[in-house]
Amino acid sequence: MARDWRDLFIVDGAAPADVGAAPETEQRRGGMFRRLRENLRKTRQALSTEIQATLFEDLSDETWERLEEALIYADVGAGTTAQVVSKLEHEATSGEITGGEALTLRLTELLADIARTGDDRIDLHPKPTVILVAGVNGTGKTTTVGKLAWHLRKELGLSVVLGAGDTFRAAGVEQLELWAQRAGVAFVKGPPDSDPGAVAYDAIATGIRDRADVVIVDTAGRLHTQDDLMAELAKVRRVIAKQIPEAPHETLLTVDATTGQNGLRQARMFSEAVDVTGLVLTKLDGTAKGGIALAIAHELGIPVKLIGVGEQLEDLRPFDPAEFARALVT
Ligand SMILES: Nc1nc2c(ncn2[C@@H]2O[C@H](COP(=O)(O)OP(=O)(O)OP(=O)(O)O)[C@@H](O)[C@H]2O)c(=O)[nH]1
Ligand SMILES: [Mg+2]
Image (tube, rainbow, N blue to C red; front, side, top):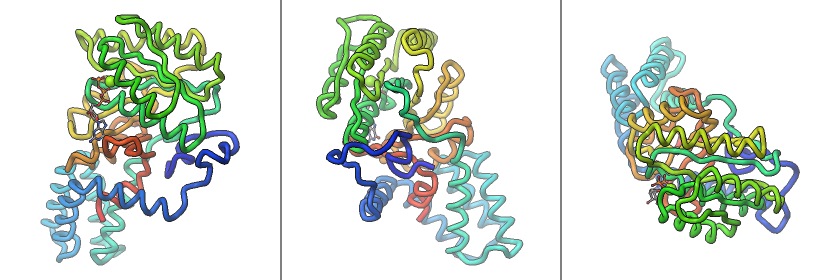
């Protein structure tokens, strides 16, 4: 279960001492949790009002119906919600758990359990580890690439190369270059209108030559058609594999949390076209429907590895289901 950057990423030994190699202190974690909680305010306010009005009152059929409605409104998803609430109802009516506080705690646990799927860590042993970032336009790919590079360098002291694989839009290349500067990492782009596969190839060649730890490749979110987009992604992957057969080691899919169930449909489509190994749920700060972070892993069978909770460099966090459920509900 990923709690901080050192839990999310599997690395050898310690990072150089001068680049933040100290583990996250309790104090810092407390600060992070408060920030997460604050960023999830919209969802939490809506949910906690309903929890107060249900689990802390006399329990009846209406309790469970209202709780279900509140969770569905928070985008936990109908199927997932039904599963969680019926379990809680069962434990409450059998007398296993009594009292609003204990029921709320149990609800938090059940929600966290739902969100756990597969291996939610990222192995950085391959040198370089190649991470491909895909997703529909505007979901936060480029921003995520930038934030991730910054954290890899700052938290783990790793060297990173960014590849500007979104060659469809000139502005996309410039945007990534700016992130590379902010993060203080290497940047590889092609000539205007170049082939995204060629850019990915160059970025990896640079990573190998310079003995970089991680190469992150950004991709386009919009082409002429959806089929074009999937075909291009598949092609970029093939080109990457020509240099490193196991690569990309990680394919992260960004999903905009504010798009709710539509985001889930998009994610399903991508995961059918390419082998997605992890989800990045972005814009959780701007929605009252943050429950999707808990349901999406369950519904797709793909773990959420990272969450975006704002537009700043530091607003990317490893996803921790327990911490997240707690921040959402209490
Ligand atoms: N509030 C908030 N905004 C975010 C987050 N992640 C990304 N954004 C914003 O969402 C917008 C789109 O982000 P991009 O990173 O450009 O998205 P993209 O997927 O690369 O978009 P295309 O390249 O057009 O496909 C930008 O304005 C970002 O600042 C987040 O976690 N929270
Ligand atoms: Mg982009």
